Length: 93
Image 1: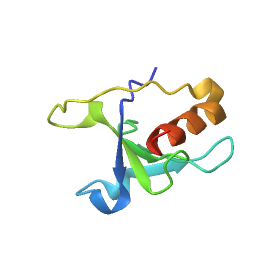
Image 2: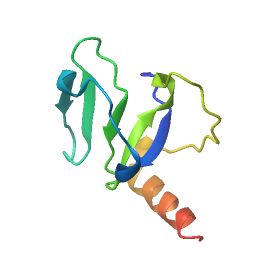
Image 3: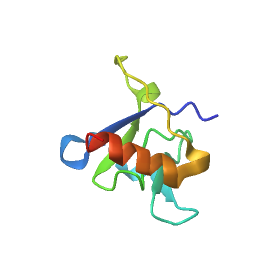
Image 4: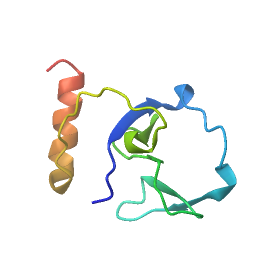
């Protein structure tokens, strides 16, 4: 519903060049993920997902230039199993 198209970017490969002071944070559920949004416009352009603790999830829809992506489905309703499937796929299994 929010139109978030995730691009997972390692922390060391990410640089926020402006707007840090406008960011607000909230957590829910397990409290592991840190959801960030702009306090001026309400857009959620990136956040810290619990599925990738070493990375940010950037919203491709918020980028100035479009990027070509291979979209993979993630079943958020069955988060535990979807994360296990993702981990197995990344491990080559």
